[in-house]
Length: 253
Length: 149
Image 1 (cartoon, each protein chain N blue to C red):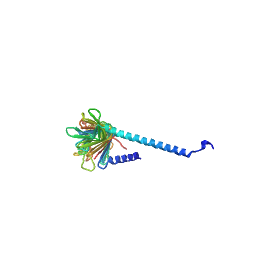
Image 2: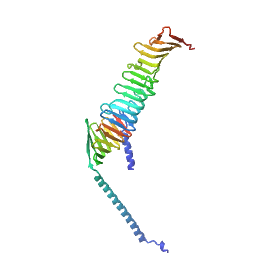
Image 3: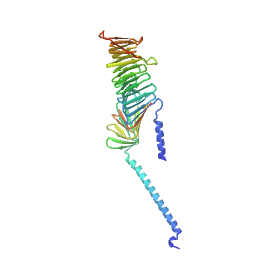
Image 4: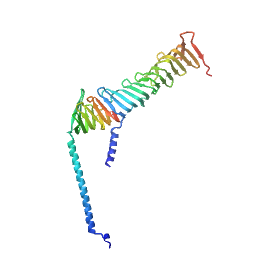
């Protein structure tokens, strides 16, 4: 009877003392924590689960750098089977490694089949995906890098750009897309191929460089250089050899 | 009447009384033995404890960690086994455990017992811990649970 009461008391005490309350972050690990006080970081080892009001993160190992105390987190580095989800910020991601710099709100996911999904866009890469929430800058590098949203599909080895942070709906205001083989952008009714594709919202011009092909309304035009004006939806294709711009008009009926 | 079927009441009464007395003597003797064992355990405990309420300290450049316990036993020249209410306390944190081996020379401590770390904004529970590098490095072993406030 006494043993039974002790067990009940211990269980109740444990649950009351160590369950997460609002505003608190709960972390569990299978193989402990190493706290390096002089170097201001701690390591969370094996099957790490971090659960807070804003996000949930799972990983094999996590290193957390802090400023003054364990809670004062400066940087988080997660390693192995990283998976996180933030209901509040409507963002979730998967990858081999994750680096989050708290102050500048910079997030980097590294590894094969890396994935980052926000409210507006989905990003995929076998290299890395980097997003800066404050500046709006983003970067995808590596094989199978891809960005998808309602209106646009971008496929290339390197996709760099900037989202505007002023409007409710995030739109791309700068874009640099590079692929030694070929980059691909599909925007509404137009498909664009080129080794380099640049876009600036200031000029509203999409610039296509090297091995350029534009497909629209059954028209396929190839050349070495092209521009597409997004304001009036017109485009021009040039060739280094002036006599060699190739136009194919397809019958879609 | 068969002699063997004849029941002597007095004989049964005295025989029963004898059994009861023997049973009481047995119980009382066992109780005495138990008391003696308890007294021996208490005496042994007193004899086995080398230091009552030991106090030690780990000093590094930035902080001092004081170590207290209810009992302590010298394992060798350097190591002390601290038992019951073992507490490591600095300005920033405290660690509580029931059994810790403290090395006075190396200023290290290790424990295989359940441990509870508390600081202003954090609580850590673990299956044991290890303190080294003069308290700058603390390793919590086994399944661990952290609450950051």
